Image (cartoon, rainbow, N blue to C red; front, side):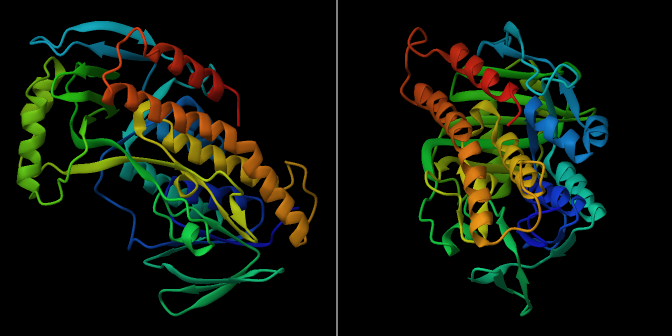
Length: 387
């Protein structure tokens, strides 16, 4: 029997949809409030490591994800020379287990649609175009005000509303993400036939020039630079900046660069990170995913760590983690403390490793002092074990 009867999930990203699915399937009455008007149809790609795929399999969406995505088991390293020379192909660790690929790329909007449909199919009520504007809680529940003037009362509120979480601020947690000094350009373009895995190039005008196949016909390409204000550029100017930066990289980059048009959607974002060091809840409001920890995508673990949060929280709330029946305030508080204690150190190691990789590049640390292979091996070993 679930520990709670009714839950509001704030945010319809990967973590929010996963939470809504797992709780609804356990018999909890779930509402999901998503501020966007509908499922996004524009976006770049996402790289999912095996431990993320493990949670997606538990959600029942792995067959669909596998069909639409592009799976691979190695990473290539290329030189920033006129040929884009492949200097190494490194087998990747299957962190989700031997029956799942090491990595899978797919379009973000496609993943969003799959997870939203899964949550609705599990019985969650999805409310688009709806934000939370007020929270008031007592020992027995949380009263919530919505942007459309309606309200509701819930046993638990799950804040899955991202890195700049309204919920985090509303419950008095004053931890905010900080920039790490890097910015990333992302484009989503047709896949050159020779792109069959992630390749990374270090050096040249960017710290990293990389790409990840996201389907039979698509690839997600990215360029990491020193962070700067790019807000004043028009869409056409953004494409030109990407084309100019990419001109230093070759091999498959030549085809990627040639496929850029004025209509290519470009995303620019700053690398940020944070970790809430104390409790991850206040009363009957709890945070998951980017709302409670975030990291640069240098080890491709952002979505995986968010999904792991939800898997652990749902396990503890639905009885399989030791609960038995509806909990009073004190018992629920203990469950939420257990959730954070189980997740915090693992998330901390991932955040620290992601930031460390970027710091080595920013500080131009000599290769013999920057143990990148050792760091990556440590994180792979960590996340191989289910959360």
